[in-house]
Image 1 (cartoon, rainbow, N blue to C red):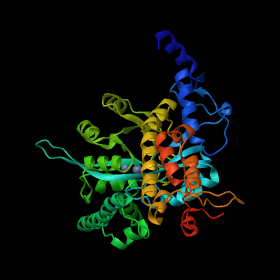
Image 2 (cartoon, rainbow, N blue to C red):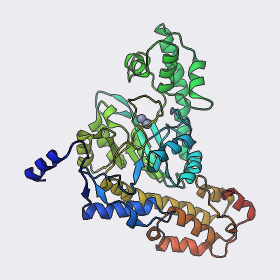
Image 3 (cartoon, protein in one colour):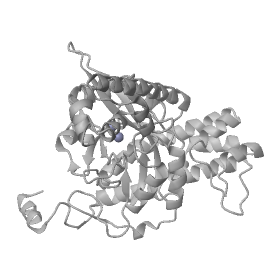
Length: 435
Ligand SMILES: [Zn+2]
Ligand SMILES: [Zn+2]
């Protein structure tokens, strides 16, 4: 941008993103492609979509905006809201695509998907995996690293393998929270394990935030911030490590299970550069660089230097209070969204293909439920459930993939193998959503 135009922009602009301009050709192409994917299963004429952006390449709110929220937590980890409430709030905030990224669990996804249907929101099944980075240098520094994984609407391939890793981490979190409580007690802060467990809720792996909340409730600190600043920060007097897997290994596992791996909140890291470098080698796809207060230049430059995607999300937990970024509050430029989907869609498409292929090779109920574990197939009222395999595949594909994605030789091949295969009524019950 020339200095003259820059000055003009400044004088006209009152606050960040205040101006409005027509999209560039590149932005318009990106926007159309993003919207095509977002509004796949609803009839949305793209002509009614807004084609205006602000100075930062973020769509303006005139017309229909495509808001992505790519990082948030529900009660299934340390969030305060149920997935349904979260989806409802996201919808109220204008979110069109929501990735639920609970810590070390995918358990909230089915409820989120169910709720999302009511509002016409798209859910990206996600998970934020707790890992440990060990620098290979002489000074063996350990650092906790959170890695976000984004999956297709069918979820991860080889789910059992991923689940095993996640359940190990969750078990480790119980031990870790217990050890934090022990440390706090030694620091003469009486706190009961049961208190932390009660806050976490039934079957929820406790995290630091749950311990912090118990500290507040017990009156040992005034607020959560103080709990972290005094006792629970990384390496703090009541900090304890769990049994997290190595970060590189986790990135590889995400790739191998059909996911997109993104480094969460790099600004929380002490040594982001060696971590990004090493994770990039392991197959990392992207880095969070956007927050509700804008783009963080340092991490954006790092992402560019290593050829990584730049995304971000609010990391909403539903704590309440003014300091928390709300769902949908992170403005992602349309080009960033387009780049994210350009990388993610072939990965997701491949994962769906793998799952369908397994069913074609071995048409068992188990393989069928794998395909539809997260996303049951909707049968409009009055329509018969799909009895032919081919029909089933068609319905799966049409609600998950765009026409272009479906129109390729491999899917044609799978489809032909399903020709005249009938699906037992019993199996159909498993996969169909009741109307
Ligand atoms: Zn995190
Ligand atoms: Zn998070």
